Length: 126
Image 1 (tube, one colour):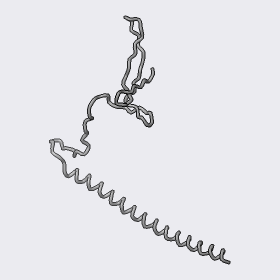
Image 2 (cartoon, helix red, strand yellow):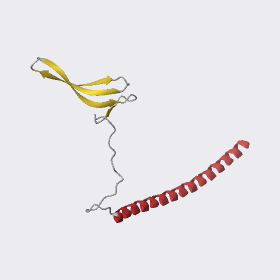
Image 3 (tube, helix red, strand yellow):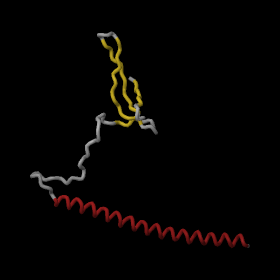
Image 4 (cartoon, helix red, strand yellow):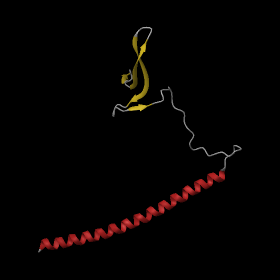
């Protein structure tokens, strides 16, 4: 089993896994290749692809869930959005408080550093 790389005319390199299979009719070994994907030109890693041509289909991830009768349950959607909004607001409040605490600590450290700088300046001047 070996990995074979081929470069086509457009400059894209493709990787294949090549194995040998015995052909009993011709009494010769024949290569059997399996497509692995494209080769990244910068890293040299194999990027797996589906092996199908064309653009992949888009997946609908933002679709609201439908109820059993096919209608959209707006109440559930509202509750879900409200809870995520509430958790985001709590996170923002917590981060704002942390920011205020860090700014106060920064002011204290700056004052301490300034007083050390003044003491060092007085020592050098003496």
